[in-house]
Image (cartoon, rainbow, N blue to C red):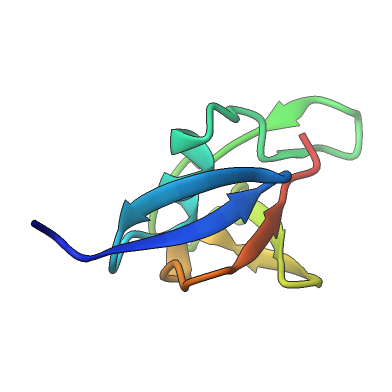
Length: 82
């Protein structure tokens, strides 16, 4: 059995495989809009490699974290703005 970590996405408990990126945990939680554009449009991961900045979330109180670049950690708290 693969090792797992438990974290929170918008207050919802999510369990993912150790090494999964935060973007995968957000998607697993059922969230599709990670943030809103300046015009209020829903935005989500586009490139999956940290270039587009569309997957930004707040992790443990730190805003504008590219969720496709950060591995999940036990008890991490993730907030989206979607």
